[in-house]
Image 1 (cartoon, rainbow, N blue to C red):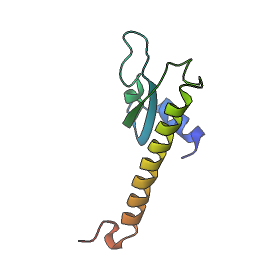
Image 2 (spheres, rainbow, N blue to C red):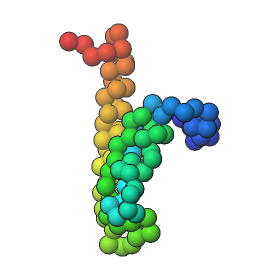
Image 3 (tube, one colour):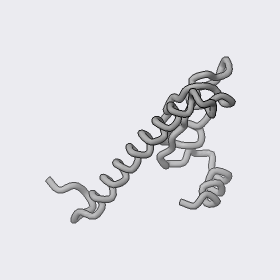
Image 4 (cartoon, rainbow, N blue to C red):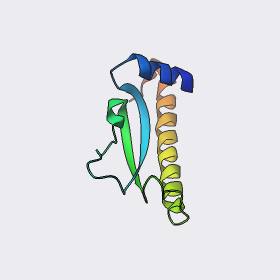
Length: 98
């Protein structure tokens, strides 16, 4: 999905988008911040991944490893699920054979 198309869909609907999304959420948040930082209203399938630091310190050298490891793990999981879905769709009848 192209980014412009995604923004257009977000602007024209009140329902959360039925797409996979990952929120890399800093563990240090302002008092009263919700777990999903409001992302649940935008994405129906939101996965929250905690990372070190806060919005400003997440790029500090001490926090970069947490961000990198979390990002790589999230992408690997997404690719694994996507490849599994793709393989299943190409089976006769579009689903896993028994």
